[in-house]
Amino acid sequence: MQWETPTYLWLLSLVPALLLLFWLGMWQRRRKLPQLGDESLLQELMGGYSTTRRWIKALLGLFALACFVLALANLRMGSKREKAIAKSSEVIICFDVSSSMQATDVNPDRLTRARILAADIIQSLAGNKVGLVVFAGNSYVQMPLTVDTKAAMMYLNTLSTDMMNNQGTAIGDALETARIAFEQGGELEGKSRAVVIITDGETHDDAARNAAEELAAQNIKIITIGVGTPKGAPIPVVSRRGFSDYKKDQAGNIVLSKLNESMLKELADVGNGRYMNLNEGKSVVRKVKEDVEGLDKTSGQEYTYAEYKNHFQIFLLLGIVLLLLEQLLSDKGSQWLRKLIAG
Image 1 (cartoon, rainbow, N blue to C red):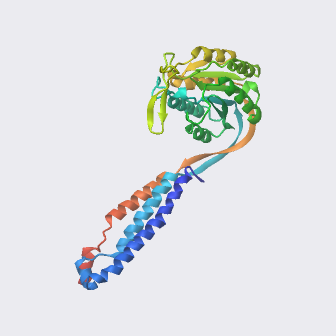
Image 2: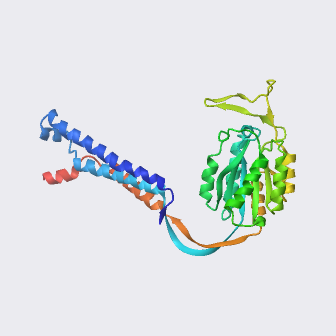
Image 3: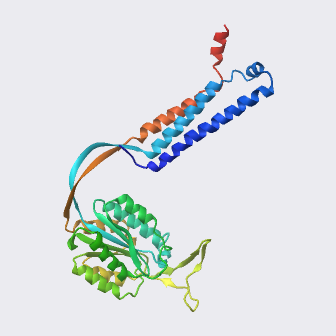
């Protein structure tokens, strides 16, 4: 048994807080009521107002709130447990976070589209080890190799062009960082490994080809994905207040950032992989998955996994029922019951 999103359980602290506020309100009301006049007369004027019913309504509402919070957290229970032998490959995604990725020649901008594509690729590679290297003027490992898809998605969502002070597009440095990441965090051999580069390729980095050749010598496949268009687009300069201008050269001319497809195709050829353009859409994800599935799979450790079923529906239904009861219950006592007692 586990909660899918246990963070929502913190909202349960609202229940005792609201209960305390309600009690304070009722206490204040009870304390001030005698000041208004004779208590029996006030009860007559209030037409059978019931403090007990008021408390029952409040408790029903609070229990309904608790049920909705539990539904958000989503209780999951394993229906069966099985053992399996992991067979996987190791893939490192090198992701360009240079300022040129803010260009808008793809909608809404290069970085956003590249992040969506990377998310689709990571999800399609579930079961394989995936790592993440970010680069601009230099590079570093953002996430070491892991089979935890949720962790990979979390790291991916943090990517922005503000995370690197040293600007540029150092693809060679990124490939070298990926090679070291394989050596330090990997368990497989070259033919079971691949590097996926997602970039606009706007670089004159001579080290890129040398790094690609070194990876190819270790039988590591290189897949390149171009982001942008050969026609290019200006690079927005975004301040804390929002868009302010476009990047300009020393002569004051607006700089156009263009996709360097020829260089990315060259790196893919050297690395025995393939080049694709982000604008090819879902076929890019399918082709990357095919390439990774075509790598030599290595048997890993035996692990146990469980199939889970969601049970949020129970709490959702219970919350709705309690909320309906709260709405149907009146603050006043039943008229026909009072008449029956009166005789």
